[in-house]
Amino acid sequence: MSRLLSSPDALRHIATQVWSPRWVMRNLARLTRVKHTDLLVDDFLRHFETRVSYGHWIAAHERLDAASLVAMRAEAAQLRRRTRFSIVVPTYETAADVLEAFLDSVRAQVYPDWELCIADDASRQPHVRAILERHAAEDPRIRVTFRTSNGHIAEATNTALDMATGDFICLMDHDDTIAPNALYEFALALALDPDLDFIYSDEDKISSDGTERYGPFFKPDWSPEYLESCMYTAHFACYRTSLVRRVGGFRSDFNGAQDYDFVLRFTEHVGKVAHIPKILYHWRAIPGSTAASMNSKDYVVDAAVRALTARVERTGRLAFVRPNRFGGCFDVRRCVEGEPKVSIVIPSAARMSEVRGKPVDLVVNCVRSIVETSSYHNLELIVVHNGDLRPETAAALDAYGVVYVHYADPAFNIAAKMNLGARAATGDYVLFLNDDTEVINSDWLEAMLSLAQRPGVGVVGAKLYFEDGTLQHVGVTFCAGLPDHIRRGFSGDDPGYFFSTAGQRNYMAVTGACMLLRRALFEEVGGFEESLAVNYNDIDLCLKVWERGLRIVYTAQAELFHFESRNRERSVAAHEQAIFLERWGERVKTDPFYSPYFAARPPNFELVLC
Image (cartoon, rainbow, N blue to C red):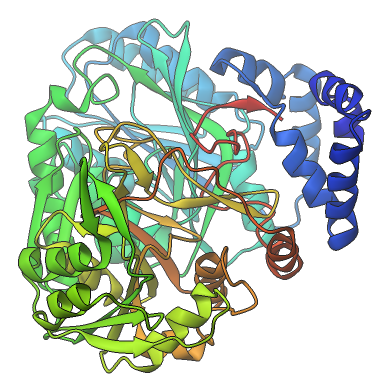
């Protein structure tokens, strides 16, 4: 209620609408149907969020004034479980002002139990040694060694790592800075859960002169498939030292992407991972650095491809690893194990529609595109129809060996229809596909199957385009307990927020318009909820899978058209919304894969003041 009273735009809207009996009755009806009225109020207020610049966001959300830092120091002193952090840094020919800024940011930490282990990689500039020796003399927590020969970044990092005695290792670049509360936030997380092996935070960039902060990266919670698309955990992070020793530190063969190679290996051994949703690291964008542009260093991309290739070969059979057309993003594919049978369930009303200016029999077009385009052939095609297939439709489908399932209930219930089709399925996997879709790339099923076979993955969704080539589905997020499609209507060439559209990414849900999972898993979770006859049944299914600890994955490597009308008014029956909110509202009130700092109506990764 306090949020409502403090939103002038929301209050103005209420003042103008309160005289409308229809508006009043509609909203009173919504409130009486659900118990979680706070979720409906949240959803209402989202329409009045104010988009802001990053500078305004910093002013509104960061509390790093002197009084706050004093309070943090006092709280840190009271922690019963105290973690010692070793910040490991190689230096080489670092500019004096940049080196001073880096050192000052570490020494400004409000959490005191740290050591800074620096290995200078045979810098020739005399100021580097002078600055490092002065800071080491002023603070005994700073330890410095000077290498006599230049070994490059991985070898220098290992030299610094050999000096570390802390419980956790933190990595920094010599030209970056950290927020004064960085180690404090890690220490708090470990005090609450000492079993954490890996913690990472959000980050941003700073200009080369240190005067401007920009490009914030508000990251999702632990997302293994996303990590194989890009080095998203990056900075600032801490790693349990015993596991760092186990994986053997850094490998010189991967210089340029040595951190990525290290994290890929390290995370194969971790148990618990935590994400601190705060900007704790400032990555300096010096011209020519990867902070300024990933495309500026070809050897970095090459090293990252080799690191990902090694990762796939450790965890499966390699199909390919290749740079995505967006620099810093990668396409990773494991081979499909065996040749599992996929049952494709297509619920259809046997409609005709206009596509690309011509009349099209949707279900025939869908099935034809599967059969004639797909390179994966161990398929079972199941069309669930209402008993009113036109003779010409049936004849066309017969040519493709379609299995027919008759849905006889006159009441429209897409969930029941899909469940009926699934009961007829004999495949190892079941793929639910709308009849108004059309396959684009031949290896779409290999892309989805290779992910669905990964340990821990439950449901895989595809990249769907409207007829005009704009985005229809690239993942689903939640606002006030209700789902919505991310970046719906954006250009088909949109890379997304830090490659969210271009690569593969973990979410809580994907659309049932194209959704793949193991048939046994589908049956274990009880299939689609038939009380959600029209809407949310696909989201409900994903959440039942996610609740079991399995991951939901979106992949851009499976592309289809979805000829849903882009301009069609989307509406949800109030009783279905009430059922969904009652079941899931509290559990999805916040979305671990979409920052609460982003606008959720529409969910386009735009900063707001909440």
